[in-house]
Image (tube, rainbow, N blue to C red):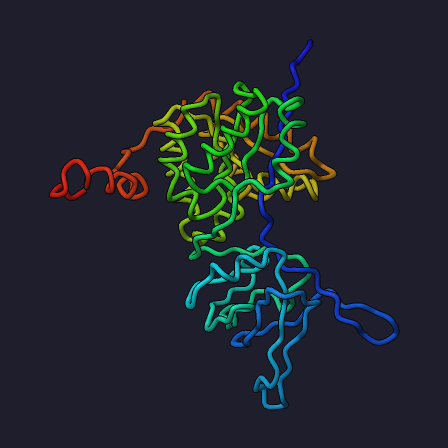
Length: 331
C-alpha cells in the first residue's frame, strides 16, 4: 500500500538558554556546571561569562556571588525585579532581586537539582520578551522550508502579530498553501491563543501543537492539565486540529516499559487529532501501543463533551473589544 509522506520542518525561533559554562579545573579538566543551593544569589550576565560558582564560608553564609551568561543578552533588558527566572525545565527556580544595565541579580528560591549545567533552558513566565518570533537564521532557512516542506512548525509564536509576520514571509516565497502549526509553549502564547487562532485562520491550513513541556514550566504543573484542556476546547470551537506533544509514552520509548500515567496520558490525547512521539530505542513498540490504544478509545467517543463554561482566556481576549463596543458591559 502506498502512503503519502508529509514533511514537517520546524522554525526554532530564539533559544532562551544559559551560555556555555566552562570552569577550568586542575589537570586541564573543565567543569561544565555550577553548584546551586536554596537562598543563594547569582548574577545573570549580558557580558560573556564562562560561569563562576558562588562561595560560602564554613557557616553557610555566601561570601561571593556566582555568575552565568545567557545566549540572548536581550532578555536581561526585559526581565524586571520580582520576575521569576526558571532553569532546566523548572528544576531550579529563582526571582530577580536587582538589576543593572549588564546583569540581573537572582535569588534561588527552589532547587530540585544541586547543579546548573551548561546551556540549559530558561523560562520567563512573568516577562514580556521583546524578541522576534523568527530569527535571522529562520528567515534564511525559509526558502528551503517552503520548497521542500508540507508543514512548518512555528516555535516561538506569542501574539497575532507574530502570526501575520510569518504569513507575510511565506507569501514572499509564494508558499500560501503550506500548513502552519502554531506551537503553544509559553504563557504569553496561551493568553493570546484566541487572537493567534483568529489571525491564523485567515491563511489556512493551520493547526496547533500543545507543547506541554515548556508550557507546564511556565504556567505551573498544577494548572497544566487544566490549560491543555482549555487549548483543546478553544481549538475545537475554532475547528482547528491539535497535536498532543511532549513526553508521550517517553518511558516506553526509552526503556521498553510504559508507566500507568503514560497510558492515561495517551487516553487523554485521544481528544486531539494527532499525537507526537519522541525518539528512543523502543519507538516501534511505542507506535504499536499508541495505535492499539487509540483504536480502542476512538470507538468509544468522538472528541470531548463537556459543560464548556466560559473560559477566562477567552473572556480576557474579549474584554478590550467589549470595552470599545459597550464600555459599561462587564464580562
